[in-house]
Amino acid sequence: MRRQTHKRGSISPPRRAMEGMKRIVTTCKQNKTREARIYYEIIVDCYGDAERAMGWYCYLQDQMEFPFAARCTKARTISPLKPGEVVEVIGMAPEDECEQEMFVTIRWEKPKLVVPLSQLQVVKASEKTKKVVEDWRYWVARGYQI
Image (cartoon, rainbow, N blue to C red; front, top):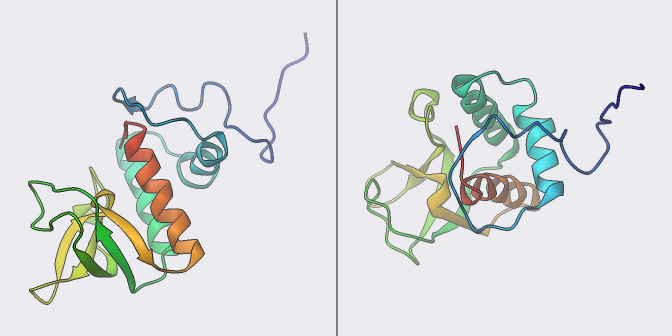
């Protein structure tokens, strides 16, 4: 019997690639192209939560172009932002703050504040920045956890 291989250029990650991920139930529709990009560019060589968190951190840090404008989409108890509020994202939070969730640094009423990236939607940024922020928002919306 011939062994099946998965080629990097195909549309979806290997069938069992995402099976070991912690995931909660969600209604977000699957996007196979986005899942393939997440698998092959971010988590392909990650073994465990810490490596997955670092994979996401490095991907976001390397791909986002700062500063950019973003709008708060939902209230969170860990953030003072209100839905509809527009902020300027100026960088990633320190690595040690991103072990369970990705956070970004914004200019706000105080000189700097760290908030969850999943709370923000890009308003004005490069296409590259929009894509990577939406990759993270998709990951969270699908119920995947680091």
